[in-house]
Amino acid sequence: MGLGAFIFTHSSTSFKENCSYAPPNPALGTDTFGWRGEENKRFTTRSAYRVLCPRVLENAHSSWRIIWALQVPQLVRVFMWLVLREALLTNVERTRRHMSTSSIYRLCNRDDEDVLHVLRGCQRPRSIWLSLLSPNVFPMFMSLPLEEWVLANINPHGSCSRDDPEWSVRFVVFCWLLWKRRCGLLLDDGYVDRGDFVAHGLKLASDFTDGIKSKDSLARMFCGAPIGNETFAEPPLEAVATMLHDLPCLL
Image (cartoon, rainbow, N blue to C red; front, side, top):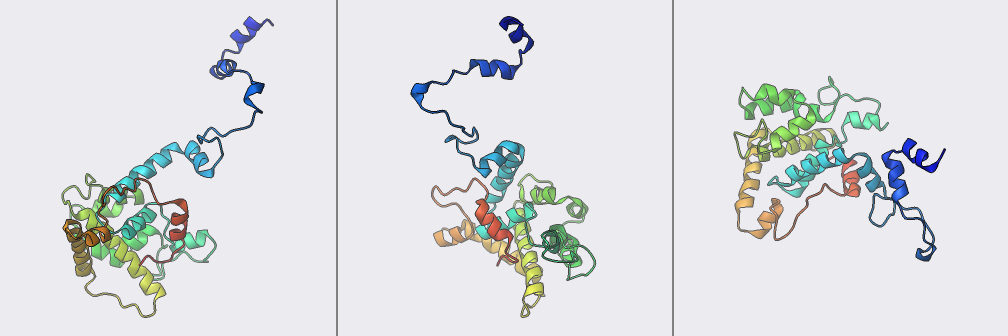
């Protein structure tokens, strides 16, 4: 087979691409392997994940930008990021990691303890959300899968928050308090369940909102308002996320 026939037969894009590359030049030094995922050609796990799952990373960064815009302390933002990733150390997660032999939620001894059950599905959280939501929104609120549920409540244009500009702050505050309540009841012998749980959550959310409006820089910093050129456009570093993943409770 002649060269012309060979090129005609093997006229794929990759073949033409390879033919267009310049041959090795000894004057430029010894050839070495390089990883195209990084500018310095050095392989990293992070860049490999980016190459393999570009859409997942894009969605993750988009979700983080929504979480970062919440006017709450940074600790609460990171907590909501862990909720969105299903990274809280529930009994379902502990069982998956062979840290427990049972995935049952010990506060009700009826259903598996996953993130949604702790924050929404169990009887106590359900009654709290019922007292905060209008009857026409409640059925949808209780039926959404985890990621849609979180985004529908923290996104200003979400289906659960569009009629109330301050709902996103109240939502994340109550999620955070419900997780703290769960950890207190299971892990702290001296914990006392609050009788004024709803009133306490509403006041805390209001305090965060007032802190954002305050001219006091310390109050604004505590409540998460960006100061100067401070920006956190990306999710927490993997090491931080891993550390927080293993914490049973965020206080």
